Image 1 (cartoon, rainbow, N blue to C red):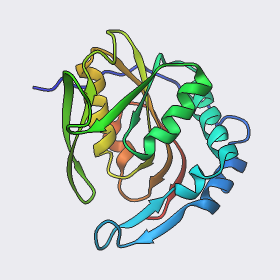
Image 2 (cartoon, one colour):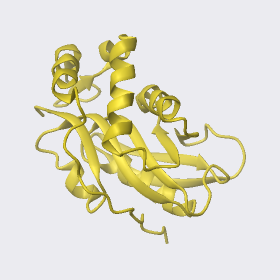
Image 3 (cartoon, helix red, strand yellow):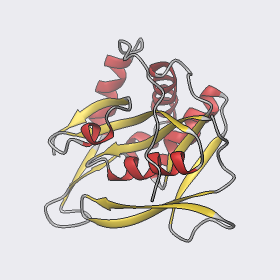
Length: 194
């Protein structure tokens, strides 16, 4: 039986300064790719955002400010979450933990299976990546159904740590991913059409 993620209660603060301008800049650069990777999916491609170092720096600063730095480690979800997670960890001067797809990490791992909007998958972290009592900020690029984030939260619990919150550049309207993660705090810079 997989332990349920525990939470660190946080008060939802007002958006950090500059969030509205950042939201507009990121929204302009998101590319919507219809029918990818499956028919009927409107893929929210943040690759153009990642190509702008200043936007990545601003996203990292905003994520850090949104959680008032109240986290000990950053867990980044493969693959696009690695871009933002690395930037957040560097901006906050916190260690980075990588949540990888099945079979990509050496040594003993914690494993969590989850359903995607368009299939199923497995995430893993190394067993020694977290310490009991760590407060972990989980970072990815897009929040859809919440399955990937829920799996990451289960990995945090398996490591004896607590979820400080989830940070994402964009969440997809209508898929209720944030509701699936309740009562954990979710910071999404913006919401896109589904």
